[in-house]
Image (tube, rainbow, N blue to C red; front, side, top):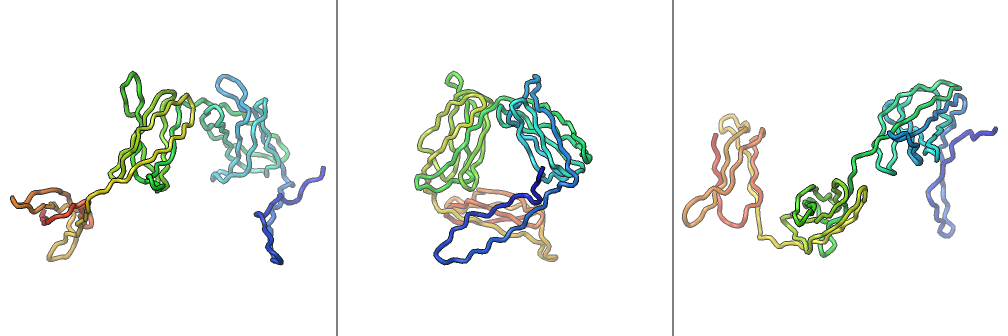
Length: 280
């Protein structure tokens, strides 16, 4: 049987404009056909039923991926043309929500066919609610809290709280089928509507949320470093108080202790007059 000497590689899509000259070089990887080994087996669930469409993948011992195959209708797989050596093998199947298999170490010897079967365990039943939070103007909202509450007999119970990413995305897992409501908790935004969603077991339910930006009063910050006057070394644990100056005198509105570098920082300081006092 004739074998390819090198593994097939391909370029990106090339678009020729007019008389353009394009150079597309290739680095081909030579097939290891001198010492071919193979690995085969069957993937089943804990009830002994075979699993079709599971992925079986081999890695080097440092978890560098080598190649993979999918199981057939009878749960079998064959990974061939593997150089002799020691490998890590794992099986996974997203269909049916199975857990990732425990890793198996195998040593392949030239000319031998190694048999490795896997048993996959079902995950606990859960569902996923996910989406994107944006403002009315289409701006992605990051660092907002998405609060998910389950509704049972008109009683709402918080079951998940997740933060939005820099692109406004969020993802929350809930324990299976039920009715849920989503709320946004943010200092800078308010939700236009509460978002209700019903999910079934093992469902991935997309829910995008639109919020309105809140106009906040101007605010500032006050920060600094507390040091020893004689040694100029920073003082850790110094007690720093922020006083607001009013017509009735001075009122403490914030308090903190300095960090190991003597630093303190008061955020969200509304317009007004203040004085900072420090001691140890």
